[in-house]
Image (cartoon, rainbow, N blue to C red; front, side):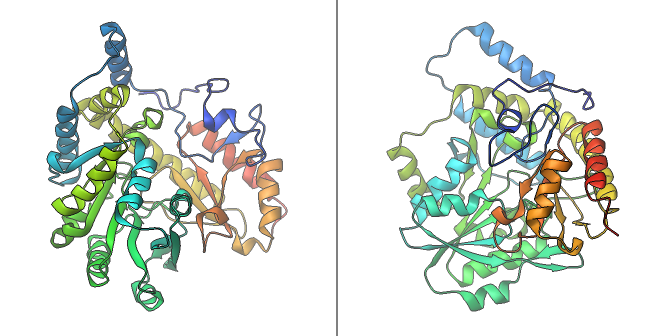
Length: 391
């Protein structure tokens, strides 16, 4: 796979490129570099294209069967890639993981209940909670040795008794942190003590860097799967988010029954294209492609972090996974409004704004490095030039 190939995605209804000019983004797609939404710029691999062509050649887009084989393929992938023996019978399909989170909130909470999130974290978490009429309970992450850690003692002290769910991100978005098995065990035990349902969004689980290992919570803490909901998808790994297919795995029969009741009541079923592409992705060819991708993105990360760390006052967080880089501008001495102006207007780069990720993100920006090496290096040069007056 030639990840260096430049693909012009402008004018293709691509959110990442064709919404660059929107006021919330504020960078022209003509000469700007989009590094905001979590979407990669690489051409779809041949095994996905072949799957789509096969679907077209069959010329039948009517009702279909095959969800059982899809679940078997997902289970094979999780066992082969991550050592997690997921039971296909415990899986359900949703319209992507955003939809999956929303459905879980409907199934396991009531209006006014509190949902815990560790901030800063993927900005859609708080939005989904608010849209459901539930209350966000932020638990700020703490930085030690340059990386984020959960402060479960502080979280325990802040509990009100109205918390019902803890919504978790593993690996962590936006910082690319891989939680250790010990941390996941401690989190699971915390949820057990406080009678919380643990929703774990693991959509970035395949995007670990060579030498790094992601551990699924069921592997790290098998004794607490009675309160665990796992959310996975091929969407980020293979850049197929437009097919809107996510998998919700719930080991406990009682929890799964509650979730299934909501799913059935809304008549949610998988879509044909999502099923076909996910089955093609979760394959031996898909595994080989992902390994190439991981190596490429890891080198992008090395170059981006090395280059941006040369800007006085800018502190990149070390990355273990994902194509989302998290930069701290605290020590530049600038107001974040000026930082954002320089990045958008002077460097002509569209990042994600850190404040949108909740408490603790105010002085950060997130940059998507899931693009060609040339664009990553160009972004580094532009950022260095935009802050060249700093001493």
